[in-house]
Amino acid sequence: MAHAATAQGFRDRLEQVIGRTGLNHAAFSRHVGVDRSTLSQLVSPANDRLPRAETLMAIATHCRVSMDWLLGLSQREEVGAPLVETALTIETQAHAPFDHRFLRWLTDADGRKLRTVPVSFPDFMKTDAVMRFEYAVALEADPYPDLAARRQQIRDALDQGTEIEACVALQALEAFAHGQGAWAGIGAEERREQLAETIGFVDGFYPAFRLFLYDLRQTYSAPFTVFGQSRVAVYLGPSYMVLNASEHIRMFARRFDDIIRTSAVQPHEVTHHLEGLRAAVSAA
Image 1 (cartoon, rainbow, N blue to C red):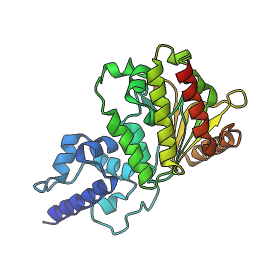
Image 2 (spheres, one colour):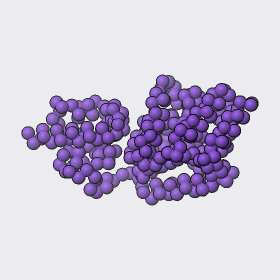
Image 3 (cartoon, rainbow, N blue to C red):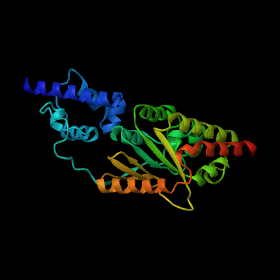
Image 4 (cartoon, helix red, strand yellow):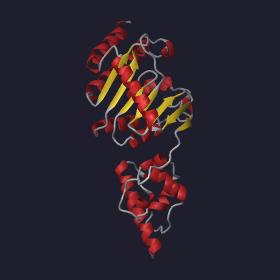
């Protein structure tokens, strides 16, 4: 009976944790790296077994709660002693559009600020047409991803209080507007629609979302994203280098601040700049 009561306590606490994330069971299983069928068994009222140690550790780590609290053995939810995390990991298969990992890392940031320096401009601002042009090869394995749903999760996060700052190179936007470099071959109409979408996003979510434009002739940055105080993901092409150590997170946050200070176009000026680029596409 004691064992069954502990299992019931675990189910109750697990449902609390899932409820906080706002994810369904399938998305939560991906979020914590637990097999979906395993999660279904754990939340089933008919289940009277406790999870395996590695499953319990995965849930506690990703949701930042103590294992004793999950098991109903403690009323202290916070982790008493910090869980040991690997300071650096490599995440492969990073050549696809912003995926469940990006959204999971955003959730892990617990509503705090996300700061990103993308390759061109943030994936969550791109139209389907631009995403499919840029990631044509990556999407061969998944030709029908629900890109709109992924973008909506970012919009929902902004509506719920998350702050997002992005630093984008002026030259990247100019190359896009003129269909040059990596954007050679994408149609003028698609470029106009994307710039209009970007203007709408910037205007609609300011000041929760702030876009800074920097000049590559003055500063350079590899693509990276700081997810609150939980991690940094540095984009390496086919993979991400993920850093969890506090000193690394602070270092990249300072680097982001440096880019902001040298930005040529501040958030309140961005719309005007984008409108100029869109007009240039129309006149071409």
